Amino acid sequence: MDFSASPMLHICNEGDPTLFRSILDRVGGKWTVIIVGLLQQRPLRFTELLNAIPGISRRMLTISLRSLERDGLIEREVFAEVPPRVEYRATALGVSLSEPVIALASWVSEHKAEIAATRAIVDASTGSDC
Image (cartoon, rainbow, N blue to C red; front, side):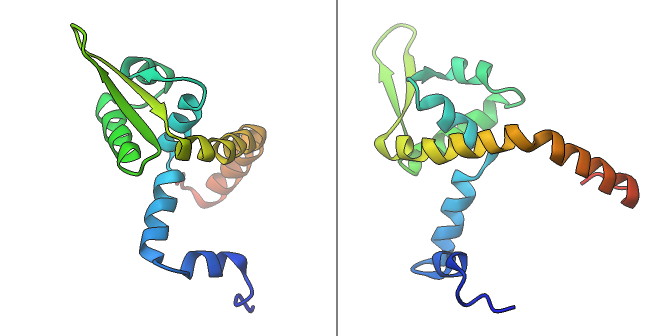
């Protein structure tokens, strides 16, 4: 099979392929998809995010938020109050990511039963559950 005309081959190999993969890894991560999807509507505090995301630990949320801030997808604002209040909001770059993120989340929601059924069949035939 000839992949030379594949748009994906061109996209993932132009410029700096290592940078491309690292960004794709970040924006495709399960926590990124959820965090960016939540912050596209309004700023949220750390505890609001923690309560809204089932299964995420405080540590993983902290790591994820720092990484998203480093990549310019979200920004953190500290308010001079006692106790200090911190809010996270999507940047313009993060908002531009929210449309494909919501589309991806919708696709998953639409196909999760089909995928779960296929997984069950494959796991039963191979004796594993990846």
